[in-house]
Amino acid sequence: MTDKVTPDELSFERVLDAPIDKVWRYLVEPDLRSTWFMAGPTDLRVGGKFGMTMDHDKLSDDQVATPDKYKPYVGNSWSEKILAFDPPTLLTIEWEEGKAGQVTFALSPEGESRTRLILAHTGLRGHSDAKNFGSGWASHLAVLERRLRGERVPNFWALHADAEQEMKAALG
Image (cartoon, rainbow, N blue to C red; front, side, top):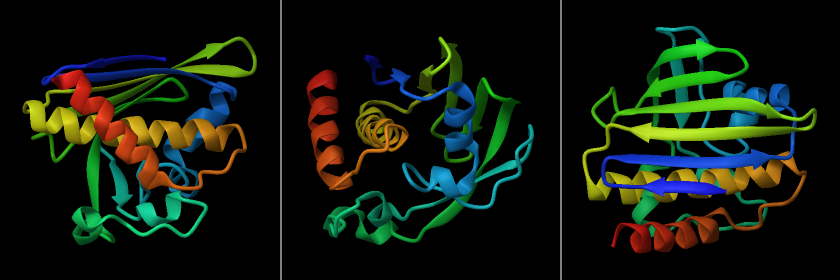
C-alpha cells in the first residue's frame, strides 16, 4: 500500500486479491461498483457518462447510521464525463465537471490472481479537497479490498472516520 497525499494530488496504490478482469468489473459495472463506492447509469466510452448516487448506507453490512454531516448528500445523483477508457486497464473520469480535477484508475496484473490498482486524483483545489476526497478514496478502497476478498464490511463510516484522521495527519 503506497499513498501520496498533497493539496494538489492524491495517489493510492493497492495490490488487490483478484484478477484484473474482476477488478475491472468492480470499477465499471454499476451493480458491483455500488458495493464499494457509488453507482448509477453509465455509458462506458470516452465522452460517455459515469453515473453515481451517494448511497453509502449500503456500504456497511451492519445497520449503521450516516453521520449527520453527510446526511444532506444521501440520494444525490450525478454523472461525470469519461475522459479515458481502455478496458481492462484504464478509466479516467472528471470530478465535479472538472472543477475538482480528474480521477484515473490504472490497473495492471500482478501474476494470475492479483491486480495492482493505482488511483490518482489530480487537479485538486487545495487542502480541503485533499482531505475530503482523500478520506473518501481511502475508505472506499478499503471496502473494495474487503469485497474482493469476500469479507464483510461491518461499518463503512468507521473506515471513513479512520481515513479522515489519516488525511488530517498526512496534510498537517
